[in-house]
Image 1: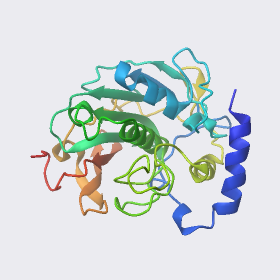
Image 2: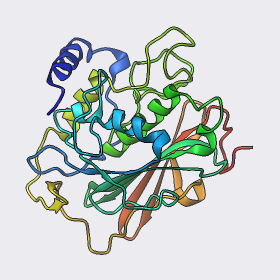
Image 3: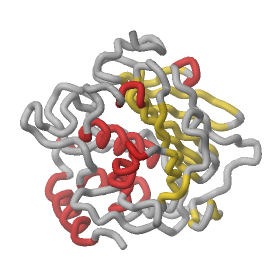
Image 4: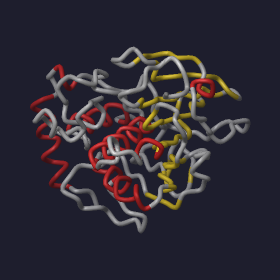
Length: 289
């Protein structure tokens, strides 16, 4: 059951604020899943440990038993077009390999790669067919990033990318937009006495409705819910790697001038990777020194 009262409040706010420059269109290119006529029911695989469980549940809005998480804050399942169950993970967290029709979410010590989080999607036939999110404990185990604010922001944002959302803004030091889809150096807003960027906001849900407010003729079952056209037989599961050498060519840069979106073609599909660098990372290489 959706958090109906919360959603009504969010949509009401959206109706008043969509015209604001801070709420500009923020889809991730044209990337989206094919959902048929139903809500998008792509499953999310839980490959995270106990340090991350609460942040995954809060971001998604449903627990591993399939029960809605009735928290006071918004979650991706509050969207009228998203109905993603949280299921047991099906991958080694170090590899975070996602099969067709699934988003796998993983945490591990991926090393001094320079990034806090990575989201990857596989595109086939014009639609997303698999996705993954990785959060890097090499940095989240340090005092600077081992905070609820940073963990909520990165988990929420990377899963948002897997649904096809981009950023509302890519400058880290400016005023928070009040959404996890905004880059920031102050996730919970306490440093600069501003809005929190730990959670979704009303415009994120408006954007999802824009992205998924149409149906597709062909549908197939990935698990229990219809998601759209089946991937090509030649398509392999998505496994993203940990460095620019694995991700292909840089196609976009963040507010610090660092490449943060990468593309490559593999086996007849396109692999898109979004990278959330640490604040300190200088860019231009795979290692953070």
